[in-house]
Length: 441
Image (tube, rainbow, N blue to C red; front, top):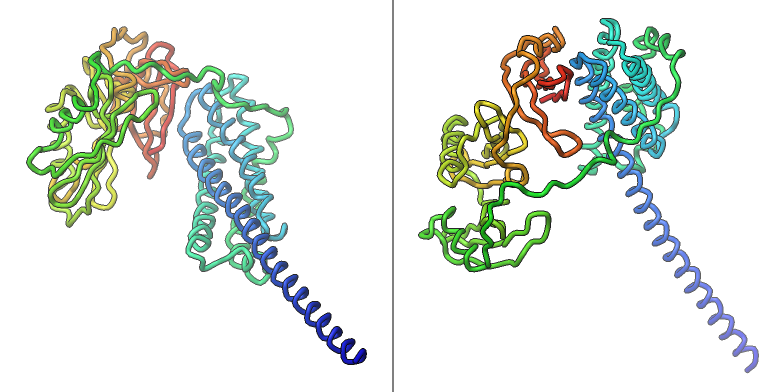
């Protein structure tokens, strides 16, 4: 009997051991899976940050080619140096071999080092020379090539056609390595000579301690309650097409709004935020599918302008627009005595199938709009034009008020133009004659 009990106990112990081992195996498998998920999430974050930083480097390198004053050049070049350092940090977190990334890392380092060297030069109030601009152009071209590679990798990772597990296998490095190898050392020989005479530079963000939130200037005085705001909705939307309106409550913020969801008889709906003070549209979005395009952009612009004028927004001028999925989004800025006030900005979305107004956003306008006392410029248009880099073909020019990093405004001369295939807008301070800002479109 004892022998039989021992035999049974042995079976039980063996079974318990098997169960424990199986449980442990499952636990380890789950832990391993969770660890991989965490690691993949970390790798994804680092990679997409890398893509963002290299994109920023490309945009800033384009700006650096057109800037023509030491002050603005110093600002742009310092930003390039900062973005390159951030890109280098993100690159270090990506789980591929050092050899594969060597050329990419070398390129990013050289962009950072060279931009920092040039920034020291411009901080000492020396203008960039022709050779400097040639080098910046070359760096921009190479950065664009790197971006193409990174964006393709991002697309492959997003579509799951490539995973970090596969990317960390040596056999799969070939395509990536081949692409980044094009960023060859030969291109940078003449740059490296200028990197020895400059000291380090600390960057803590432009005017970071001066950023403030302005008090809204364009709201009006009257305070609207829920019912009054609901009635105001029908000034923007035809009552005959509305089935019913739901009140979603107040939305707190710098500008307090009443939010409504408007359900239409055709089963579509739109969301609209009306300001508690003034009863104006802060934000509106009409959620419907857009059919085949039947009207052109110029017609859409006229529809948008008529909508603005009909609802108490006179003297608005279209500045630029984008088209996506059959919808044109147009940016309008207020004009006063021929001066464009880019602080007073309203965006309008128009459907290209029938011209419906599908959306509106007026935060800039409501924050900034007021009648200004605009001083006469201290320099002439011709003097401002002489500040512009001669490589830029000027297509249009005029006076404009633009915001600053201190949440103030400044009167500038605006020059729109292009260098080769890139479109730029350059703003020259109408008082000091210095470059105020440069945008690449």
